[in-house]
Length: 73
Image 1: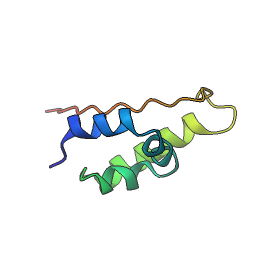
Image 2 (image 1 turned 180 degrees about the horizontal axis):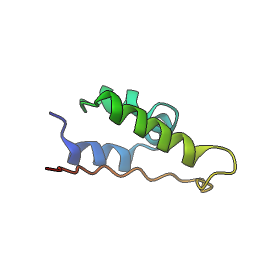
Image 3 (image 1 turned 60 degrees about the vertical axis):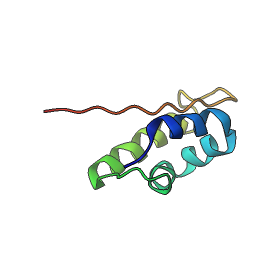
């Protein structure tokens, strides 16, 4: 199981990791030990692609990546 606090700390301290996340979000999460289901992978990739496309809402030179977990029953 991934240590999300440690992963958040890595994102906070390593701007290159944030840039890698924008180009391959699922790959970065998997390389950090996060188990990503196929549907989650699709949604993550779609969302990151949408916000980072030219003319999209991601216009800042600095990118902040935040990690959160939701549990639904």
